[in-house]
Image (cartoon, rainbow, N blue to C red; front, side, top):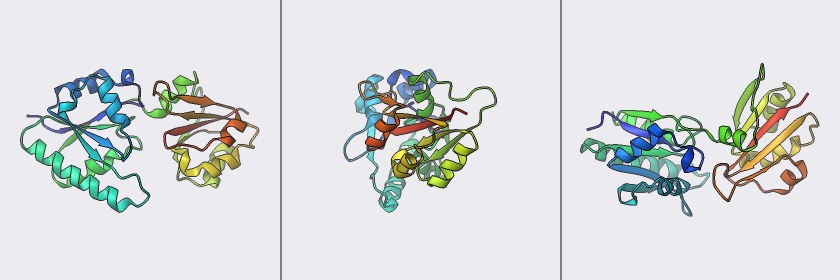
Length: 230
């Protein structure tokens, strides 16, 4: 019997970017809890690419809505199910895309398990912005550069404040602040590295063309790295 539920980080989308430790945990698990939306599951695609048997995967739905009440109820329900399987002696893994401790909604499950006195431990993974840097062959930061990572819910003034301070800015989920980003594109001293679906074969998109960025509608799986060039 395991001493904890294992929170396994899958990496950004490419099955080859999972760590050896994470893959071993998935292979040893009796049950792997995998999030799905109403339309798809990138996490499930990664599991299939890793050769994890679908027979031991238990999917759980996460409503994609700004109304958080339904999502929170779903996390509570799956925490009950995870606690039940762990209590019965199963080796239990719960998966998260990217790194489980970095802007990951798996924290809702971890928090609920803690309330149920169920121990957890995390296995580190590659966060999306690191994969984006590799895709663009970027040195995200070097020498004395400062890096700040902000969520897409940040306001335009927050974004511009970091840019004016000369910091490299990573914007996670910029679909939530698309208008603010596009207002800042006029800054001549910054290069905007825009990404979609980094790590997903056949779906990756990368550009630094500001006109192209202006014309795009940012999808959920998008990310920005803004470099100050002055």
